[in-house]
Length: 429
Image (cartoon, rainbow, N blue to C red; front, side, top):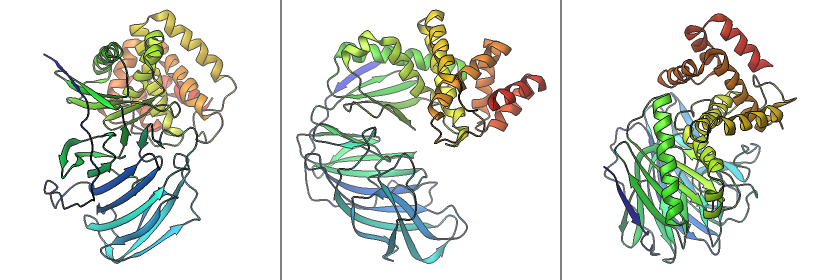
């Protein structure tokens, strides 16, 4: 039994901001929690942020806290338990996916122990105009998409829950993950499911359609796609989820959002319960359906393949996701289309560095992760057989194996020492 709801987002009203402690968050919790007021002016590219981070300490002894924040923000205060000692550490090289960020280091007045909650209060504002042309995060009068690539909130690399209150011109509609409500003419998003990113999207023509199935629910956030395209995408996603669940193991009822971004650049990315895609139009989806099935399949596959470190071991995320997408094309579009992709990736893999120990910033990294890695997985599937390969993938998921050594051990235990040795050498080739 399914029901489809097409909902146009309600108008958002601008109001002076106020916030209070959320009662739904217990004192004893497993994650840090943000309570944030965001004022957003897309036309002027102005962002004002005030909030509290209830920071859950995981270290046995901690005095300094560090956060990444966009360099164009002017900080009014950054306090830990009322200690206003912070500095911008300009000696730290920004991580490659946050090229416009600076590191904020703030110090408390005591030593924090594992399990302590540190109250971190912050207030800052700025006109954000700097980001790379390839960035998936933008602030523009036509489309706003903000998250950790800026980052616009104090990003610290761990999971958190949040309550977000947004003030914006009422002509704009806003989307963020979480339960949505309105309070004092402000839009509120409360997310009790831990995430690693706080994504906010806004546009004058933003709308949401929701598909509810027995084993999953899907929100589609878009800015003008025709209903025919939305229906077709929902049908394709349902097939992708069905196949992945059969191959890699079903999950508890999935609830996730697919954001069809208005931006042309930046590609796609996936978070705990959201997939964000850029540059998709009705005509391109209808005329290039297989291309987008692979695109969607890759991002959805990350719901299964996501736990490896983002160094050379990232092949366990990206190569598995890409080969899963290729398997999906074989299933839906046929072997001929699959073989065509294989031949293209073989050509792209020529004369590239080895997967094993690869520098993630190497110019070959893209080809290694998205072409060479999948080709090695195809060779492994050919060697042990399709059914055994799928069973191996399922066991990797079941055992939460996210290191190369762990995968090789799994391969030895389920196949043979010979197969493990062969694949180890293939990764080093």
